[in-house]
Amino acid sequence: MKSSTFKIFKWIVVVIISLILIITVVTYFYMKKPLFGKAAEGERLERMKKSPHFKDGIFHNINHTPELTEGYSMMGVIFDKLFGDHPRLSPIDSIPSQKVDLLHLPIDSNVLVWFGHSSYFIQLDGKRILVDPVFSGNASPIPGTVTAFKGTDRYKVEDLPDIDYLIISHDHYDHVDYETLIKLKNKTKKVFCGLGVGADFEDWGYNLNDIYEKDWNETIDLGNGFFIHTTPTRHFSGRGFTRNNTLWMSYVFQSPTIKIYIGGDSGYDTHFANIGKKFGPIDLAILEDGQYDIKWKYIHLLPE
Image (cartoon, rainbow, N blue to C red; front, side):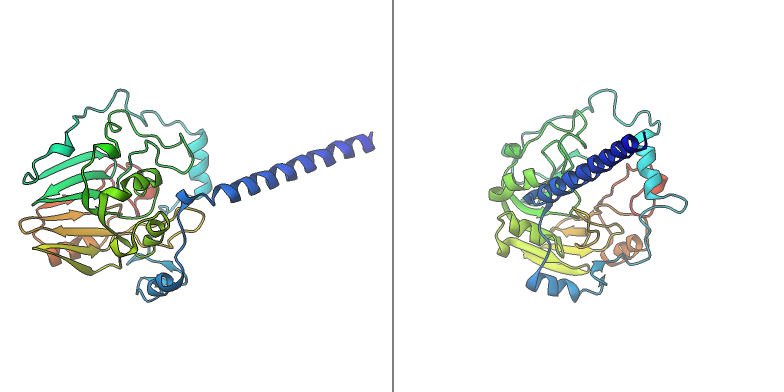
């Protein structure tokens, strides 16, 4: 009896170890796919190291920023996600939306089109700007896990005109969508992103000379009265197991007639007031405001 029990136990251990090894190997090779991006190296990495916000191999927020609010743990969050009761996480009906013919907009018309979540198109003073585009319908490296709500999936890359300025706030999958960006490559004239994120775009075939990879508190003169000012935000980054190896951004986009603050993802902090003092008055501020979860109050804005 003891021998039989031992054999069963041994086989259970063998099966568990085998499953762990298989999962590890599959995960390793899956994460070699280009959608995960590429880590900075060489001259790009050396430039990152010179940033005052880069320390001990990662970027840091201006002020101490816990990823979770006090009293919560990552294991608790995962358990609650898997087994907790969370009604009304998705709209019951399709979100009302109107599709605009972007390909035939008069170039002299000023327009803002929100595609849902953090993706939007701006046409301003003759320039076309695209922010954090996600048109694949899935904001995750695992297909079918973070899908777009009905009504926010009406546009595809093919519906877009050529883009003068592609602006990226940070590298999370709901802001940097591999499938979308591959299709946008031949439509995009210039890309603006935080330190380290340019490695992904270069790896995906974008021309290095068209990638403007910046630190906080820089200004790019685009000519003819257009400027992009890079500004801080309070968030984090990462497309794999490594966190904060690229810089998260907000921007002030300045045309000859209008200033727009593009807030990206951010928790509340002193940077909002500082940006307002430096660049105000701001004509339009675009901020995220749909998190509704006290667990993330340091890295996202709640409606309150």
